[in-house]
Image (cartoon, rainbow, N blue to C red; front, side, top):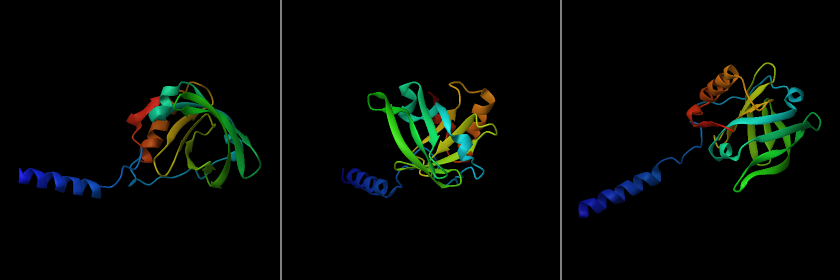
Length: 163
């Protein structure tokens, strides 16, 4: 009995020392933003076509990015809330090449295809990632490329769900 109690105590102590989960991505994998990101081409309507976690359960989600000058955007759209899709309106500022601060989030544009039809955005912390498309549907080759970008940046594409 005493040995069992000691083992349980030791397990509790060791688990308290274990690193906290790092979100959706492997924190040991380097992450990079799109250095050639074109702010003007990114502006307009984006459909969230794939996401991690609860976002995928809300149904169609969209975001409209309107440039407010060289340094930012006004962003409106729908996001997943506790009771389903909800409208939002926020400002976003450019904080570096392919890096955007929106609210409290530091979003990194991980990839955009050459024609700005599909984009992958995520956070360095790994708390957030999604695939955006100019249309509600996305070509399979572009979706495959988006998954490859997520994998390259330390995300597990197996957890990505269509929206």
